[in-house]
Image 1: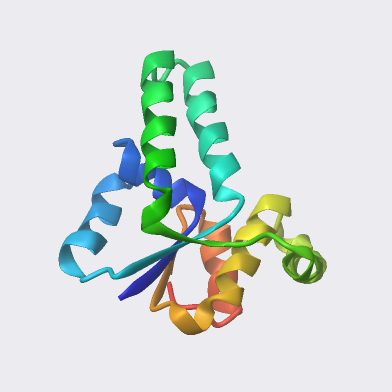
Image 2: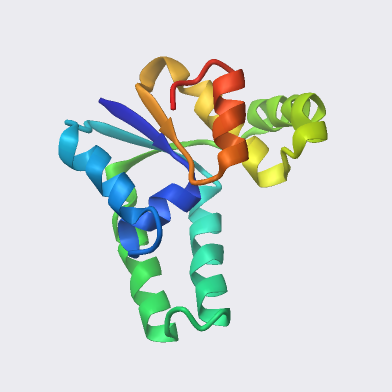
Length: 141
């Protein structure tokens, strides 16, 4: 099975929080061969980590370890390159779904998933709106 993860879902693989058990279950019950991530996940992951520090949910030392672990794991992932084609499609999707709340970074995540949909068996987000739009775009969640 091949899977696309947005950043909020990927983070649960590195740090236990609400929803981690559900994501872990997917990996236990399925033979996940390939994991696809948007290129912006490299930035968003660090942003999530440092937000957790600001909110005093993790220490700075934990933050450094989390970002180091993720960086070391880059080789495990297939990153969807953020390029002009992706940006143009993301703009179109914001126009299409902006009224229901699609925002910039989620539009890039969504577009990344769409660009690799032929390779993906399941798409996972921890964001209910993004999951809804995945479905509206014919992506399996």
